[in-house]
Length: 270
Image 1 (cartoon, rainbow, N blue to C red):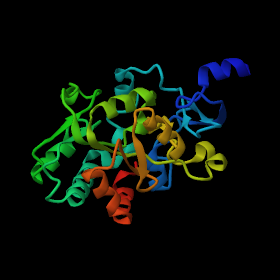
Image 2 (image 1 turned 30 degrees about the vertical axis):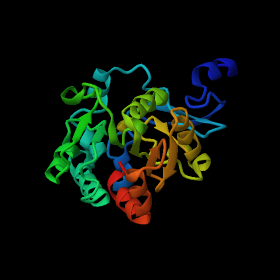
Image 3 (image 1 turned 60 degrees about the vertical axis):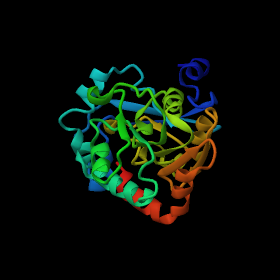
């Protein structure tokens, strides 16, 4: 493919800048490989290409662009998915509920909360047990919670979702539309390491078996949020808070500092 065609097909999906080919990795590379210290799945012999923007640093693969929900169910979110992401079974939701309960405390527990991309609603159920009465789940790809809410929320959370979505602008357009004018968006996605140019596709988070297809730098994440009028504050390399203007919820998370970061590092890596 010549340079002109390559740019037309693989221009940056955040800022339309020029991209660089970062290499290819086997489809069966999973996030669990990093934590287990071994390959959890046998090689698939399918190579997945990744590209990185030379301006904002956004890194992505077009491999999943044409996949349907059925394709993902059959090849990613199948009966072996828990081998790729063991905390998905419930541990992540339990720890997130514990974290949010501590962070928001009794005084902010009545704030409305929407968990975006929350599947069957495990986090919502756990939060309700902790006294969160105004919370809901919305997941456009899960039949149990696929109806888009007709209201807006003081806090929208989306944990370990961003890296699984090809169209980042549409994702953040929808996320931001669900946040109240004086509300906040709390998201987790691991930012690229400083030596990403050296690591390339050997970076553990570039794992196609988990359907990881989109990786931000702080600059690229800020770019896509600013397009919707939001400011970004990163609490760690994984946990981020965004808002149109500072508010009680955003101030609470910003005040937690390293305490919130440590909890998120434990519960959000996949």
